[in-house]
Length: 124
Image 1 (cartoon, rainbow, N blue to C red):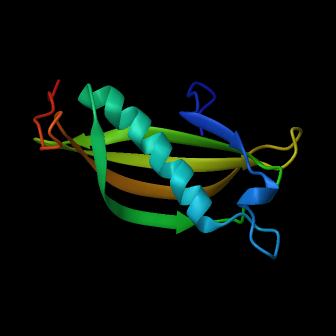
Image 2 (spheres, one colour; image 1 turned 45 degrees about the horizontal axis):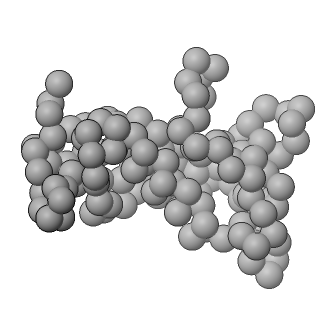
């Protein structure tokens, strides 16, 4: 994680996001990753995108209620209509300790027009 990079999204994991054991649901984290990935994909595509694939998803550490989650997203590939986005998630367990990497994922989005049909993405 670079100090120069700003997170795409930041959110605090809340009790409603936890399972019976008190850990945050993996699906909640997946949702946050998809939101972060779509933010950078929309910017790069210049409009609406849809998620078409979760290419990889790795949980490295659990997330707990009260953790501040920061999702860093970056477009790594641009195809004719698709974009590949890498998302890395860090958790701050206390505001004094360094953030730890908890999740990383790679997702594919497709740019779509107003009729929800694939549209070209500018390569520049």
